Image 1 (cartoon, helix red, strand yellow):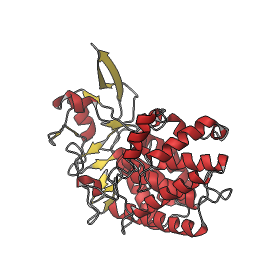
Image 2 (cartoon, one colour):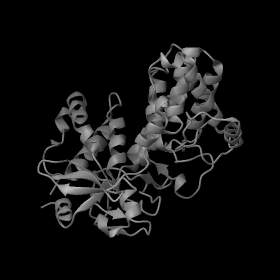
Image 3 (cartoon, one colour):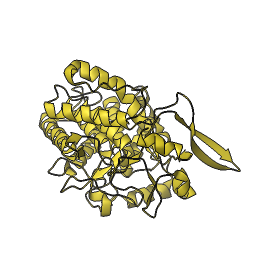
Image 4 (cartoon, rainbow, N blue to C red):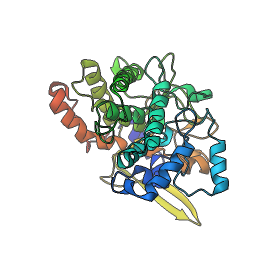
Amino acid sequence: MSNIIRYLLSGILVCAVSYNAAEAKKKNSELWNTDMEFFKTEEARRIGDQVLMYQRVTGGWPKNVDMEKPLDESGVAAVLGEKERRNDSTTDNNATTVQMGYLARLYRATGDVKYRDAFRRGVEFLLSGQYENGGWPQFWPENRDYQIHITYNDNAMVNTMNLIRDMMYGKAPYDGGTDLITPACRKRLFDAFYRGVECILATQIVKEGEPTVWCQQHYRDTYAPAPARAYELPSYCSSESSGILALLMEIPDPDDRIKRAVHGGMKWLDDHKITGYTCRRTVKNGVSETSFVPEKGAGPLWARFYDLEYAEPYVCDRDGKPKRHLEEIGHERRNGYGWYNDSPARLYKKYEQWCEKWDPGHACGINLSSPGGE
């Protein structure tokens, strides 16, 4: 019996949800709009003008802010009063990257250079934050504590690199139909992307000589897994690793290092999947609980965190003490964080196609419907 299944059978588990990219997308739904007809409307320009107001002097944007909600005179003054801040610009929760996509589409539709110029300031912000080793922190130019670590959490660095890739290859709306990006800038983007790949390869956790997956954040000097908030300990992390592997599988003509990283990461995820359980949210007396309950044929799911010693799932409260069961931590963290996810499941078909194209001789033979590793 696998350690994971043994863990699950020892007690009923509860999943949790947290503020994440999906909630950010719901709050700023039009910022994700790709219908070019919309960008010809006055509403698109109204939102675009507010996006410009929220852009910091750094060139980046803060996170978790509803930038579509109409502002009155006092609201405008409050937003403009924050413009000089240098400590809240980030790519966490899709901040900055989604605003840049919106401005690029708005410029294509209107030709108004104020949107182009703001977009270009966003490009400079992204490039300015990259460490020499290729990684990006969570916030910059001013940051503190765990914000300085190389940050994969919530796909912050992956979202940055995906945008850079789309810009350097001229994918719409960043293509040759506009002067958004100069040839010289495309060269800088190309260099930044592949330095980012080098950082990804350097931070992949190696266990007994085999590449595995990644932590949510890594030390910028040693590349080792690093802690963040009290309940985010150095760990093997499934969801963020899924985003990294998806990015690596998009790289054309991958070299042997990338191939080894992809095979190793996918094998580790397959070995640590959880089957036979499902997540169910219930509400009792106005209080919601999300439970892991046995269900034949359900899954697979993955724990967000696996400890670095035994690669077993754990949860953690704000006291920083890892626990094996959700009922051992308080209600706030038990229900206020995404402890389980199915992100890796979306990679299996992609990995199969990737192997067929780039490395059929070394496919690791994973199967989405098989039980987890022994």
